[in-house]
Image (tube, rainbow, N blue to C red):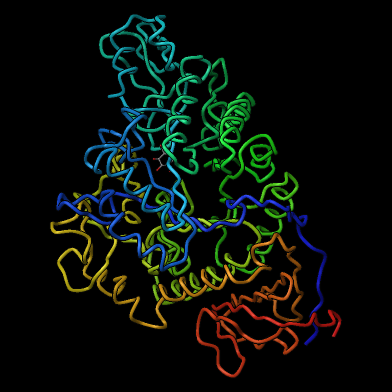
Length: 558
Ligand code: NOJ
């Protein structure tokens, strides 16, 4: 077999003082589904704090907490009523301070989630705005407009909510409407109001002063809308009037200055859904966001060519800004990785997000592929975000009873789109209790009986488990300088095997077999350090990855 190295993708970015976040692995905690300490069926901060061992043992560098501010909970915390404190249902500010201190003692970074596009209808500013007349300073903080039609009975424009239905709700008994790009309970702020900009700068400072290490920024691309709010001609396509306006970049320049002024390597990671990687890159200019999720790879199906193109695109285009790529394959908004990669019979139901396709799943195949994807991801240059439960190989719960569903997408789509509840079902910790160790009482979303098979404690005891693979890979990654030092990635062309993806970083080679046939790496790639599925006599099975290490650079043309 002939293997040839191709030109490096992306620049080498090794700096003498490399901020931790450039290569960090962060674990996303969807708090209400992590661990319940007080038996109300909802995960909380003391529950998380009591299980920090899980994260340390896993070997992640920090955690990102989904919003846990006071909130009516229409979108489980993404409808914020007060940005300055912690919801008592999660333990309040004292529980947060405990978590922060104990996480820091273990060397774990803690990122909060900031939600600047919208708040909750229960936020005092929105309550005041509704009570104030049209044109008032109170209404100016949001996007109120007169309706169209003789009595203003039609919305001001044709925009739609991301969760389905119109993006406008009429103020009862008046001809004014307010804009909500998500649920009607989440009014959009008007970012042209100086009050709004000033408020969020204070909020950032408040939490940085309390000691947090950064923020994930919710829908970071949406804050500004086209100033005239014009109709969008074709709503089946990305509405470029409702998001990604040039003014948003000034916000992140200011936020970056605030973060940098602390001299603590604080990070800001944007959730930026834009049509192309070329649209994403400007958010990562050196004076803007340190990080932004790279969703391009998350949207790829299990296919070597798509993965290679997407990885190359990320390294080239994000790398050209000087930032590293923030890789991720899962979060609380998409179907779990195992289910996406194991989807063998996609159902014919339209969904707005291709990462939420439903259908028949081969969970064993999906888990093998997800394990392979993990090794691939952890070998790439940049940082990685993992979503809770990913380390357990947990599949999506596709068959939640309809009456249990809570995602606003389900309601606003007229109960046609199941939405995101299936990836938010509370975690199984043990196989022998009714809530699988989540808490003392039934959890807020029902856990299926098959969750027992994925329980964390059982997996810690099982050497070949998906959890143990995650821990081994994460601990090994920390000991492999080539994976952390910004060492460039060089693709290896594998003759006659388009389904095999291989690249080298320094002395380490990562190889992934996407197809159904096994593959034997040439001896020059070195010895297998870690394989996602047991390799036999040097042969890597279908749907698997391995890391190989050699101490002497082989002749690329050999
Ligand atoms: C993106 C968040 O990830 C999602 O969960 C939330 O529903 C929307 N933004 C609205 O805040």
